[in-house]
Amino acid sequence: MKIVFRTDASSLIGSGHVMRCLALADSLRANGFESIFVCRRLQGHLGEYIRNKGYDVEWIESNDDEFRPESDAIMTKEILARVASPIAWLIIDHYGIDRNWEIQMGSLANRILVIDDLANRPHLCDILVDQNAYERMESRYKDLLPPQCLQLLGPGYLLLRPSFYEARKSLRARDGSLRRLLVFFGGSDPTNETAKALRALARRADDEPSFHTDVVIGSANPYRGEVTAMCAERPHAKLHVQAENMAELIASADFALGAGGVAMWERCYLGLPSAVTVVADNQAASVRCAAQTGAVAYLGESAETNADTYARAIEKALESPSELLEMSKRALEITESRANRTESPVASAMLEMDRRG
Picture (cartoon, rainbow, N blue to C red):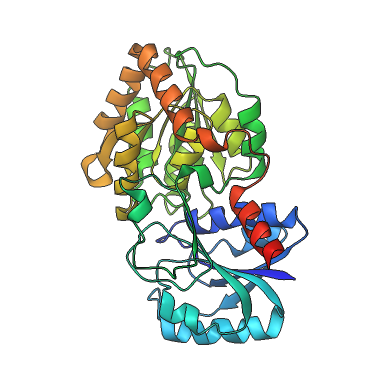
């Protein structure tokens, strides 16, 4: 039986949808499932990266960036009928897809799982996953789902790679000192927050190597050349492109500058204190909720940030070890319900539903 993922990545969309689908695909592969990805061939699509992870990619050809659900559904059905019968699960992580698209899949898939965080459109699915934290989360999808749909809501259902579960079991005790800084604003970082953060670091004298900096960008980052040059000028900064060891980098860091979304919850899961910038509208509510619990520090939206913003965040981290320790504690608490997991709770729920028939 096969699993099919319908998701996209691009320089504009970012890599988050694909990365969380890959995390789930890895967990399902460990349980004997074969996964296929169906994606549009957009600029920055990550197709080669997906294939290098061991998964086939089927392409929906696109002449522009506009998503047209009607034609997308037709082309997806053609692909499913050709390459993936029978389909155990169709997994959808796409903001342009809703119930109308899902209905058209008909009998091609035994079950449908939707990954969402907008709660702004109806779905026809067996499982709905939203791994973010929100106020009144339990009623967030009211009237948007079938009555029998299983809702997996909150950071307890984070879609994490297996390396994160291993890293959490062996976390070192942080002491509040900033010896290692992590800078990661998502795979594409369309507002180039990375460069702003590097300008803040450039203000520090070269004879002030009080901490090392790991800078992470995705292969689709449109500012890759600029960021590479800026890192080369910093003797205590190391650039990582499409890093495969994110769990290791997060676990070894003492403080981070980063975006909301998937990466924020990965940092929280490993107890890394971070100052967070909202780089996309869909991140705002969950970042504010996490900040209210004390799990992160909220810096504002990308339009409001500059090098001064990040310089102040770094200086505050250097001067306030007790605040970093408290933030680390709160970050671990917000993800505590799944701390002892050895596999994805979402994959476990899917397997249990299959067993029940």
